[in-house]
Amino acid sequence: MSDTDFDDWLQATYAETQGFTVLIVLLGIGGGRVDLLKSAHLHVIGDDIDWRQMADHLDGSGVPWDGVAMFRAGREGLVADDIARDRLDQLVRALNGDRTLIRDGEFFNRDGLRLRLDDAEPQPPVLN
Image (cartoon, rainbow, N blue to C red; front, side, top):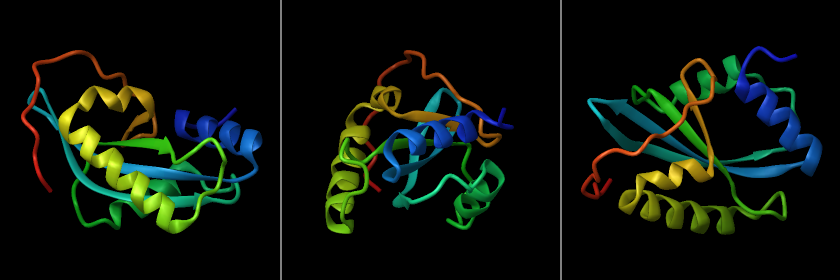
């Protein structure tokens, strides 16, 4: 058994795909708000990274974050960088309009444990 929900998710997803591209959106959470902070994509070509190492990479973003939403870039597993960038751009635009889309991904806190997004008052879009 793994230490975190993230570790379990990564191992299961890698076992299913043998490699996949993930879209990552760092989130600020507080005061009833979920704010989009930064985003990136990552090609996962093994399951040897654990939550501690991933959190260290996310901390390298230079922004204080409270949670992270991760989405597979596509059912096909690994996707090319240009496709991943386009899909990430589309995802961020969609999330700016509707934070409930976070439910379609994997949502983790700073400890690598799953979070659940409950309904709240709609938020106006924020352009980053």
